Image (cartoon, rainbow, N blue to C red):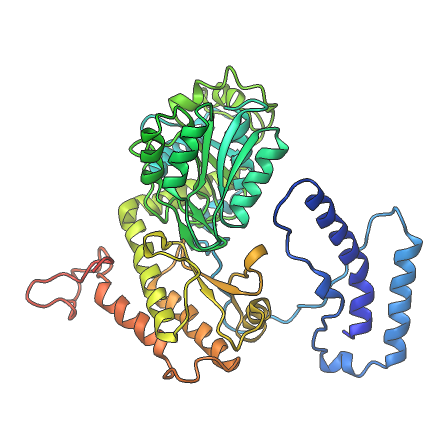
Length: 502
């Protein structure tokens, strides 16, 4: 496709999107979404077939596209995009921090004929899904909810069922997703005290304690547990301890979208009142389920909450869940997928799942260290189990181009830098259904891409892969039910492999 035609097709969309950004900024959003103005000048490589097309035909097509755009003002836009029809051999390698890879058995469970969710048998599906959510959140006291939606919908459910317009809430902002949560709270009419942190830091517990003492009427403290933009996992027990020292009665609300199921999370023990996650992260499901758990304290706020709630009403869900149903048609295939995904997690053991994620994160950081690259996370205590966010080497001036190159050259999807760190970092996701061999493939591909860009000149070939490989070999265990078949040569003198922390 020629640059002329590409520009003509995308210019109206670019203008409309930039107008949206201006509107968002005018409504007190501190950080702008990444601008796509560069799309108007970016070109895609033409195929051999398209390169034979004459310049005049491209110009005519561009003029027609522009004329069509100008003559159809007010009409629905026609979405045009470059062609991506070629299917490369092998498989696509997904290493973003969500959506994640979906196990075969989960896909099979979701592949079923339509059925009636109002038939008597369906309550077994409802109750199993709700019990599984409690297991995942490590709660006996919390009330689980499964909404059709995403983590953003779960945020809204948490706010609207417990708070009222004008309520004072303290929220940390240290990444794109904590920013979007702040934005939602403001748009719902909450009085937000926003604690700004550098992107790469986690929640500052000392600052939290101080601000709570200054604002004893605070109704909720909101913490993004794992900020997916920066690869930072905040210390929730320390945040709870700060609230207790300040004598605060506020609710502790936690965004666990990319942490629950990958990082340690103990809802009851840590005194969390609202916890949310989504299906597309550590659960290794498609996007589409918003999982929420509310403590008894949070549920007690429902009667006094005056924020509007309809689709995300706890009260409506409570009535229907009690008899094994939902107040509207649920996402039936995803519920079956959730039950199967949780069967796999319970079979492995939730603590073992979390330990596996910790091992994968440590191995990825070992690779980064061998490459001489720095993580965006500023303190080891905040390192994430879910993903590793790396600063670009000097040879890569825009990591967005690097990530796009990885997809176009090696069929590998890595995470882009978002918002304030757009173009400055790239993200390697290692959560969900994954093993050492898969992750070594991501590390190897990343090293190839870095070398293609001229980075790692003074680093031996395969250094990152070798560092991760050594760590994984030392910490791996035999697969359960296969460990009796053959002796593990890594175990000598009745010693077990070292743990992730070793």
